[in-house]
Amino acid sequence: MIRFTQSIKDSFSIDDLSVALLSHIVSKQQNKELLLRIEDRKEQKSKDCFDKETIELLNLFNIEYSRIVDQNDNIKYHTQMAMRLLLDKKAFNCFCTDEALQKDKEEAKKNGKRYEYSGFCQNISDETKFHCNAPFVVRLNKPKNDIKFSDKIKGDLSFKPYEVDSVVILDHEKKPTNIFSSAVDDMLYDISTIIQSQNNLSNIPKQINIMSYLGYEKEINYIHTPNIINIDTEDRLPNIKSLIDQGYLPAAIANYLVLLITNRSEDIFTIEEAIGWFDIADISKEQLKFDIKELNKINKKYLNMIDELRLSKILGYADEDIGKLAKLYIQECDTISQIKENIQAIFSSKGSLEGFEKQFELIKSTLQTAPFIKDYEELLEFISKQTDLKDEDIMIPLYYIITGQKNGPKLDSIYPYIRNYLGEIIK
Image (cartoon, rainbow, N blue to C red; front, side, top):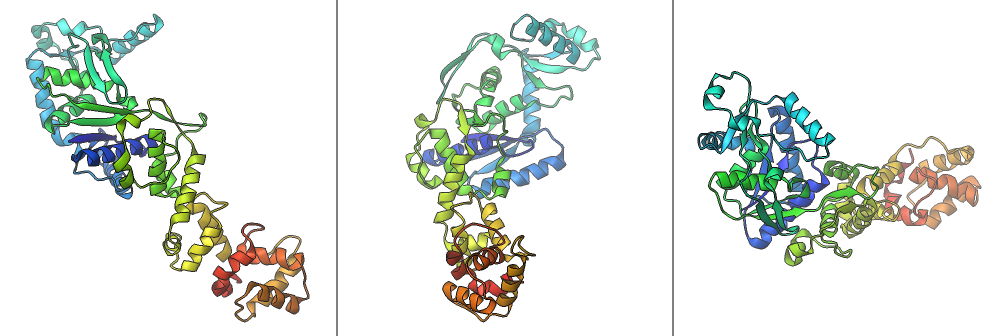
C-alpha cells in the first residue's frame, strides 16, 4: 500500500497537490492501493471543514484513494506502543520544562552547534520519577547506530544518532505526536511506499528509529519530491483553491505540475496518459520554480480544447454561441474568470461613453427599436441611415454599447454570436 499524508492547515497547497498527483500515478503504475492519511491535531470543527475541502479537491483532480485514515483513528494503538517502549526502557519520561529546552537551543545556536537533547532525564531513577509530580513528555532513546535508508530521488542517505535525537512520542497531554503516530500507522497498514515533500525528509530517520525499537524491520520505499517555490521569490505560492477560484482548469493545473516535477518539455496530456510514460527517475532533484506564466500558457491551450457548449455551461450559460464568443477572448485572457468578466461586461448595463455621449445615446436608442439584423455590415448600414453618423462616431460608441469595453476582439467577429441577444444587451 502507498501512503501520502495531508496535514490539517490553512489550505491545500501546490506541494500537497504535486505529492497527491505523484502518489496517484505511482499507485496506478504499481497496481497498489493508495491510502490518504490525515495528520491532525486540531479541533473537530476545523478538522471537518478541512476534510471536506481536501476531499472535494482530490475528487476534482480525479485522485483515487482506497481509504482515508485520520491519525486519531488509531490513537489507542499509538498509546499502547508508546507504553510498550517505556516498559522496555526504549523510551523515557522527560520532565524538562519548555524554558529549559529553549535555553539549551539558544546556547547551541550561540555556539554554532546543532541542537540535540541533553539526555538529562534519561538516567533519572524510577523512584525519582515515581515521586515527581511535574508534567512530562515521553521521549524515545536515540538510535545506537547511524540510520541509513535509500530514497528513490535523493539516493542513499545516512543520519548520525545526534541528528535523529531523542524525539518526543507522547506530549504533555499524553497524546501521541504526529511523527510517532505516523510511524505506527505505517506499521499497522503495512505501507510499502511513502511519497511526500522534501520538507518531511528529516522525519524519516526518526520514524525508522521508532519502528526499529518496536521490532518492525520491513523495508519501505521512500520518494521525496523537491520543494516548489515561486519563481518570483517575493510572492507566496498560490494555494490550489485560489487557482480554481481564479478560473484555472484542474486538468491544466495537474498537467503543469507533472511537467514541473519531471522537467519534461512542454506538452499537453492527461494524468491517465502520464501513468503510461511517467518514470520516477525523471523527477527533478533540484528545487522547482512555480511560474504562473507557464501555467497560463497551458491553461489557454486547455481552454481552446474545450467544447464550445461545455465552455458555455462553465460560464453559466447553455448556448454554443456563447462558448464560441468566449473563445474569442482566449487570446487576451488566461483563465475562466477573466473570460467571464468579458462576457458579463457584454450583458451589463452601460451608462454612457465619455467623449461620445450624444452618439452613444443615439445609437443605443436606434438599436432598441431595430429589427433583427443577421449580418454585421447590414447593422452598420442600418445605424448609419437612422442616425447619419459615420466612421468612428459609429464604431467607437457601438463597440462600447455591445461589449462594455473600449477594445478587444473585432466587433464583426463578436456580432454573429450575440445578435440573438441584442435586445438583452442594449438595455
